[in-house]
Amino acid sequence: MSRSSSLVTVGPERAPLHCLVCRGQLFRDRQIKLDTMEWLARYGTALICDRCSFVHTFAGGAVELWDPDKGYPF
Ligand SMILES: [Zn+2]
Image (cartoon, rainbow, N blue to C red; front, side, top):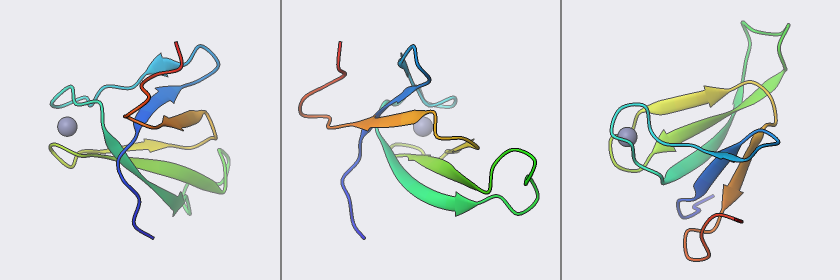
């Protein structure tokens, strides 16, 4: 499955996610299994920074992906 990169917001407030390392705004997403964190959620989302490949991991379904051509929904 090859998808292009996305802008990402987190949580009901839709806070824009910036890479913790390079402040990049584009990420590729992967569904991951959280074997050692079953008290949180069975599956999570890994967001891989386009620019520096730093992986941001979310345990719940709080992330939303947006088409970079259209921008954030606000
Ligand atoms: Zn980065």
